[in-house]
Amino acid sequence: MTDPSVHDVLITQLSRYGTLDPTDHAAIRELLLTTRQIDASAYIVRDGEKPLHCAFILSGFTYCQRLTRTGARQVISLQIPGDFVDLQNLWFDESDHNAQALTRAEVVHVDIQALRDLASTRPAIARVLWRITLTESSRLREWIVNIGRRDAHTRVGHLLCEFSLRRAVAGVPRDQSDYLPMTQEQLGDAVGLTAVHVNRVLKGLAQRGLIERDRRQIRIIDWAGLRDASDFNPRYLHLPLP
Image 1 (tube, rainbow, N blue to C red):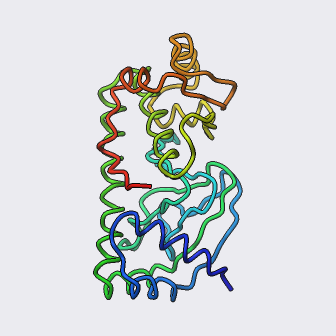
Image 2: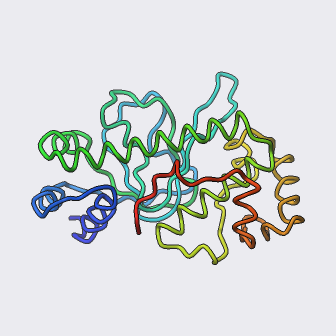
């Protein structure tokens, strides 16, 4: 039996993307939700699998990635608490990417067919799910620009700005130390650089007085400076109000 508060968390997060009335809330509370603890690196869904549920993050961080035929990895998105991991699989019969836990995470599994039925019968909920999916697409477009048209320092700084701002909107104050739950290799796979190059870039950002770091503990000490140096405009995030 799922703790009813989990339904409340889901309702709160969905309501940030659109107006849901009490009957929508009641319909969401009818969903059977299953919570699951996932260890770091564990798969939530694999490329080629038939998805049976959508995962919603309660705590921890996850990421999505694709592999080339030779085994090279491209990280294509990061998810934080309050995000769906794989909402696009709601209407697909086969996953086209891998989703994994970046850290130990707690996720809620929502049965795909139940969520499809909900979207089909509750227009307001369908609009919210559509808006979330479009927001994910907007982030992906920006990541393509980041990898294709920005230099190494700008790429890394841009990702740091995005991660920090999204966490701040989710309730983590930006002036607190930001734990970046990624190895330098994983960060490199997100921005198209080697781990060695990422290390040099982080050192450079620190020397410019934009960040402080201790291993994976990174604190942005000059937000405006890093934002400007990283060509960062948050418009593409379409962030809902906290």
